[in-house]
Image 1 (cartoon, protein in one colour):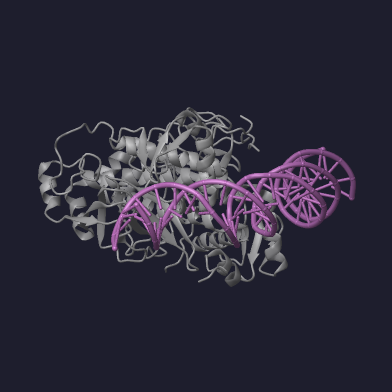
Image 2 (cartoon, helix red, strand yellow; image 1 turned 90 degrees about the vertical axis):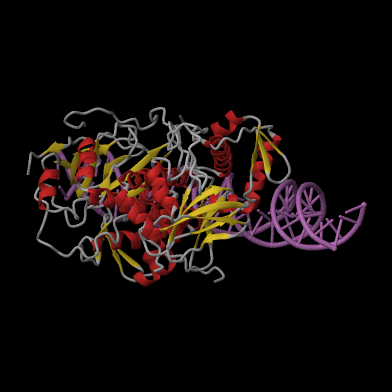
Length: 270
Length: 270
DNA sequence: TCGCAGCCTTGAGGCAGATCAAGAACAAAG
DNA sequence: CTTTGTTCTTGATCTGCCTCAAGGCTGCGA
């Protein structure tokens, strides 16, 4: 199943424990201790969780001189696999999926990203994966050569990239573990808990969360078919662990049970 | 659907001649253009491929003042999951596996590492995975606080860490793709080709390569059982694609066929 | 040279999840 | 409200890989 090429255009709105890590949320832990400051990047609106967090006012001015804010519609691509990697993006609103395509057309969702996450940073010349919106949203984009200049001027920025990258790597390894060792229900449970935590960490109160990804998206992320994902979700519903609110709302009623299933404390010999 | 300047277009079914990155070998491409210098780190012996490559002589002196060289036996752990992350390691000889354990005891091999690879770098306080030798070898270890000092003194070093980290991340994503979308034979084929390439890149001529990992190790890496790995290898042997030399020697006779299977050009609708 | 321990191979059978198929719930537009 | 297209759910069947089991190599040490 291919996504139809989005209808909308990207609009540039001019200058304005060991706990298994959440595989959906590479910025987890990066936001701790940053406070709930009213001190928000004027241009991009997500300073508190994103790239710009450690920068001072002068650096922010510097940075915002070149960054651009764009509105993106559901299904729009932010960039495609193979595109020249000219820009680095911060997702400031909405949810996106990252996809990788094989030569024979098989496709896999390698991750989801939320408000505050960084997208498309690579030292290579091309994007190794594509990024598409699942919801309406906004991104803040910055020219890559400009970023390199900023690295030189503000070393703390480069260090932040390194820390984010290591976090993402750890999250990828957790996902590898899940794909290699978890059964279908364990994977879906872990995914739902991760999704809820990612939204809570962004100030979403719950108990009802958005689930903008389709069963097919989730399946491609978890290495399952959409039918298997659906069956797992139905099973959780019948056990009273979750409640569905329309197609894109989900409520975690018994989160403990989901966590138990999804964190590898399973029935195997301990 | 384009960016204001718009380049790339959606290439859903046929990505540009993009080669799947070798999931075993995060340093691939990092060694290009470094030359075959006789200029080797006296203390650690792997400057040409490892961490120290971009450093000048003064910096090397600086670094070697604190680094320690250790010999490790097969099955020795270099560090364990959960250990305080005091040191960063460069594997200078031999082959190691990285493992991650779940609370219920399930275990997964999340990667293999070879001479020149970096091990155990994390901004966290504990190692998120363990590292064990498969062969005899040596590692060069450096205190982490010392590394932080070196970062401040030689910014190029930090940049190198960032580049390595992004490479590793891309390799992890390829592995995720393989675990989610490849069948058993495709995974084993991709693994064998990766292994051969990793050894060739380190000057091993072939055509017979070491295979120090057991079938069980390979299975835990690929999300398969050891029997399934064995059956795949037997199938390749019967097709004349490979030849085995004892338990730890393997010869790729028909590498093209293995690459075809292992790179996602499979029989799916193209 | 022999014996032993660890690893590998191969077979038989079962099961989790894929595949195929039909219909129901939902959302957006007329 | 009805229509229409999309997404989700559920059932029936199939299959690739896992599981369990037995035996064969290989390499090392006595």
